[in-house]
Image (tube, rainbow, N blue to C red; front, side, top):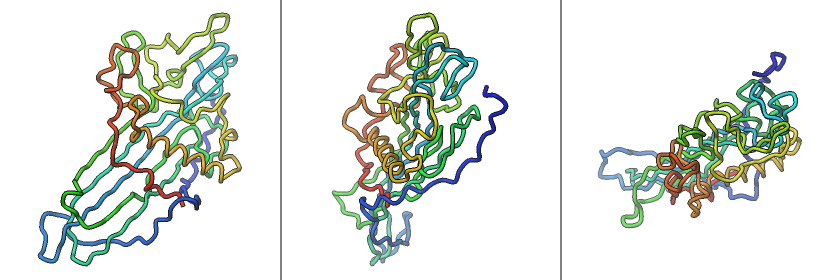
Length: 306
């Protein structure tokens, strides 16, 4: 547990992701009214309404420690008085929803398109109440969320043979928790798991280097690339957004695009893992069957960062 002298800072207000004027503008946005149920009138016509959203929860976790590992103190800078964290990365649990439905609207209704907007809500402290500096602007902090505050919506006349209805919700994560003795996987969406489970590599004092805290019954396994890896002990002043809104915005956009790509990419072993693997038990690694299916409908071209 952290020392009692550490006082958690006040959580900052969320920051809307705007100002990237080089990206497309949403243009004219109009609302549409009418019946969306099965009961329609003679003056209604079929319309196609397509929507997409993405919400992300994240925490920063330790990656490497040296020279001595100890579970007595946990955080993103030290695990003990003589055991320093020498690298951190970000665990995410992301949810995307893509939907297309046939709705009935009055004849003469105008088509419209509304692009998707996001908001960053960074936290000032980790799960142990430790603060690592000021969190404001586009600083992600030791944890937080990236939320859709305006969904993508496209409303157009329904075209038989071209449009089809679908409703897909997917949850993915880049870490998996498994028992180091049985290699059985478990639910990997719990952000209160001990920070020590995330250690990928550590050096024991007066002992050879070891991979992972194998003395603990559970371990979190990174299932794709190290998202937002930062060397050394974590501090908010080391983030790209520190005193630089332009750099912070650009980096956050890259993070959002990369997370979305883990659902939409063509390479299977690069995609997010499902929260609770069913086919990887006993193997100690994640098989492709426990990764999310490729989403053919979500499109980052519909993101608007202006």
